[in-house]
Length: 347
Ligand code: SF4
Image (cartoon, rainbow, N blue to C red; front, side, top):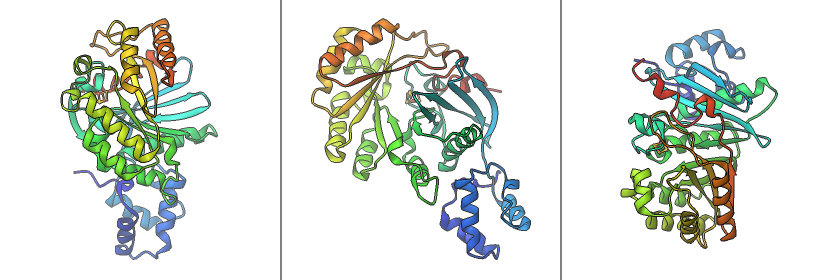
């Protein structure tokens, strides 16, 4: 049985632990500064706290629940991928990307994923468990420390790694609360994006929450027949209902929704499908992000070539749909979701 994770504790629970340990009230501020301003990864770094208190905390808690097992940097140095071992022996991945003047972390929210998207290595792993808010935050804190070593700071955080964030709604929202809290990591909500394949009840809950965090929908196809072959969740949450929920979101929040569309060669990249997508999104406050698929090891699916991606973009733009192309990054380091963790299965 491992100790609870310090980054999972609320201010209130930390305060009560400090009270139990007979500490004065100001220790909470010192402890939280160490966690959220200095991003400490081990107890020895808490030099402002008495040694006896640090020892007492170390007996009760795990400070940083991730062990770096593998670290790979792409040839162009713009993508870094970390394979972390969790305290229970499972593996997750986190990707740090440096491009367009931004330093963006892509965070995992589950070990594995139950959604089974056919183009995704994580989907092929199946579901193991949800991550806690502290495990989610720890990925961000690790990358913040990494950037600080180079005199940089994190600009964006995307919940787009392993797992479906809206199947772990409470812990994801707890992590965002701590990430955006002024006494937490004080990170701007508008610099955060959550991506979902379309868990409708949670999209509605997110809409009601009127969060400033960006919402992305992983669409990948403009009709139910095709989408169901790529994203099995479409059987439960079909496109009409998903588009309705997305429009409710934009009406309610006046914020645009990001539409993620991974182009797969010969599967979902024809101009006829671009037209269908334009019809589907007509009148919706949205931005389409196109990306050529990163091939997963066993899927047998290839990303569309650049010309097809550009032709797809041009057709959408011509039809009045705002569209950008995201570059395919880090392909030689298995930067697609779940591609490193699946190699650790059974190890
Ligand atoms: S694409 Fe996302 S939702 Fe689909 S299987 Fe992979 S991790 Fe899960």
